[in-house]
Image (cartoon, helix red, strand yellow):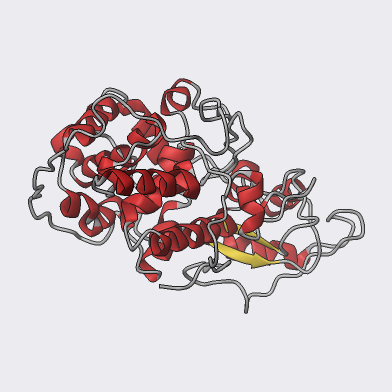
Length: 362
């Protein structure tokens, strides 16, 4: 497993937490770009919740073997899911499963929005030997909307707060916001989760809880239980209500994704193949003008590159994400373009040698 981009050492440094997206708001406002409830503070004091310290005994979960023909990314993910098997199913997971089943339209819409990005995220998690379930986090965080913004200005698929994004090298300027960059933010989120996994003794549930509530919140809850002689696993910690729901919701979602027919869940089909590849640029370009000239749907190009806030590649990485099946068409078109057709006197250079023919690596 690769190291985090910023190794963690020394005394605990409080990182501003990244917030869970409000699934109810997302479902009611699928076209909106604002997700998540108001945040009282960036680090909240753990509080006792009625019934929280009651022992929650997991029930062993077993699933029927399903044939896998290699063509569907959801089925590939489901066969790689392990966290529900390792932790069993308890009443908190069942409660979240029932909530999700009551909001099936949200799952269907989020799965459709995930289509351009999902294979890249699943493949990258696999390369890093991280749980496949983590590919579901953007459903909870942002409903897989890379343009999502919370009330507290968390942004992107992974809902990074501004300060946390900077901690993980996500640049934020008037022209470019790395939190909305699908490739850069996914790398940052995986780096952060990897660090949290190491920090909390190799426990992915605690790592996800800390991703949501902040490292300090989870550490203080663990310390409080240690002083009382209570178990320090995720299920026994006194955490904010949002974080109590966050991990069970992801585990419940993994059960539904793994067995959609059993639960009557509709998932938008997503091929188990890369959707986009990288086009390297020599100079900044106007995305809308490029799309029109190349004959590419502007919305497709903009949805793959939402980090460029003004629809120009100034002050950001010198690359674009483009659909793989349109790469040759785009390359042939831009080779013939003159400086005047592009943005003023700016030229575009395409390097096919640096364009990934398969998986884009963050």
